[in-house]
Length: 347
Image 1 (spheres, helix red, strand yellow):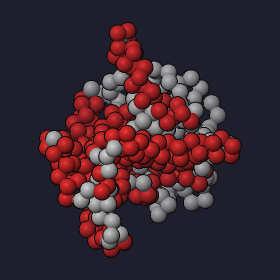
Image 2: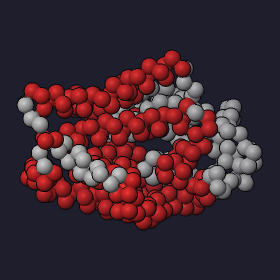
Image 3: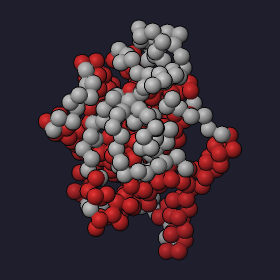
Image 4: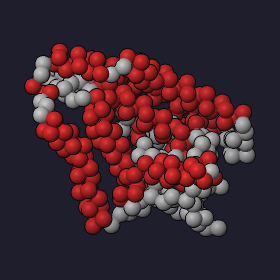
């Protein structure tokens, strides 16, 4: 089963540790201001905006603005084409149903969220929060990026972890794990409900409104690059394990961020091989959360098979739109009256 009920004592401890992690970068920033005898929050909004623009190279602003708009989409398509040409999807059950599901999950959110984001940013936020526009514009770029990176990724770690530990939530995340392969084609593969309730577009919109748009774009771009590369079937991290002179870099890298080896293990369809670890390795951008909370394993190896043992290749529309549409596969977790979590078939 791809879920695990957490012990209350461990869960409580992990939540308390998380609170400390959320507060740590803010405390470090304030301590820095105290030591440097700086009080940027006392400066005018116009002055803080001027300082931010002067301290951030224009090429950096342009790069991450375009990366979020169209760069990541182009990158995913290019890497996906390379994967197909290299034959990395051959003999991996990439059927017509799987292709449609992957394509819909890639395209639909990007089309649907554009008008939602525009309304949210231009209409709803000024109405709900009329007096806080540019409230945190005084936060320096790199401090803002650190605070956002920790807050955003730690929250997503918990969002992801709970979908594996709370049976009710599992079916909203199941679509992502049903793919019997890894690659760019399935990187965006999620049930629409899972995507809607945790989408970075809301966070970026809010942070932009509060004056932290540039650090938010920077973090969002870096995070997307890391998570896309961790899902890729191109095992770019292998040289760090096979070349002795790169071992020190690999040791740090695999503990800091998600890599194909650590994230592929999360998508394995079994734990019997000592490599698969779908009940852990929850980190999205940072793998360090899994080390802190004891949910990660590092093997420097890649699973042979991926997906879910109980997978019945449910209809693409059921996987994308459950529970609005349900599967016709009898006994499926996505079928009407189906089990909340299906038992894996015995070998």
